[in-house]
Image (tube, rainbow, N blue to C red; front, side, top):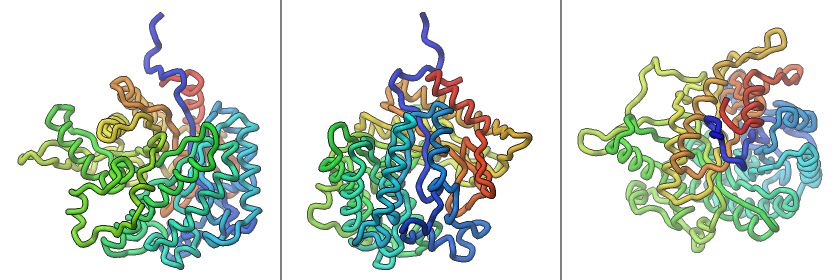
Length: 449
């Protein structure tokens, strides 16, 4: 009997993803401390429409009904994050027992609904108290993170076996301290930004160390990276070589220390006097063996071999199709080339797509339905490229759709919707979209429909 088209391996992991600051709300409830995003959202003009994280999806109070909905959709794996300031309101010091107990209840509820948790230790919500003491610029954050990681793995490691240390290092360092577009909104020197990235890598190392020390039998840990994605303009030998060279150069700052135990000489030459300061033992900590690499993939950069043999970026025209998120050009082949290149360049044997999805402004419920055809076609086209990558040997073991529910989309506030479940932010009514039914059918069939 022939295999159905676009069938995935029997043990492939299908899931959805969210992050604590984007869905929980209860920003100042249960002893939670202020995060940098709680502060940043109150800065005039920082977030669209003046939106805050105060209520978000009210998941803090509604997690059980959300998990029941996940179960009805057949979702058996869920990537979530813990809010650092809910565990340590000041980043370090006294533990907030009410916060610890909240995640005990939440994780127990997940398991009762037959859903496997994949826990991200840090998804951008740095305690504001640590930012006030220097933030990612200073060693105070890695020192505090070490205690935080030990605390959460000890607390939940008997039930959580899949851990992700950090989400998207570039976003909470380069974008947050160099470009000012994400909390805390700094515009620092290149040297300072490079140092924030290094401190984030040290935190990753502490996260791995904590899982190895306290995670127990079967515990696994990895990083989620918003890897710089690249697509060869033509799938010719010349353009593929150019894309590979571009991929290597663009991803050296984060992935080389993890996989090779040092910064690439080419990266340090580019840094010049702005290279980060590295303490004794940092690279040994950073380069501890991990069990998988998580990749967040949305759009892609098109590259070809230039006239002088150097990689050349080809910018899409103004009419190139995009989501309503202006940074999200529709590039399904990113889900083919990025995991393939990550495996080839770094030798990773276990890759998970920890985020993939699309944001639109016009998802509306009409007569009880939200017919997001655009999202269904987006997901179908991307997943077909993922299937092709796996057929060509890319070691992808799972896929987490971003996002389970419409939520606080950072500087875009609540106007930008990524969810397969529509959320009415005034009533907190959840309505599964057309894409939710389609994705549920994909999970049930284990193939693209």
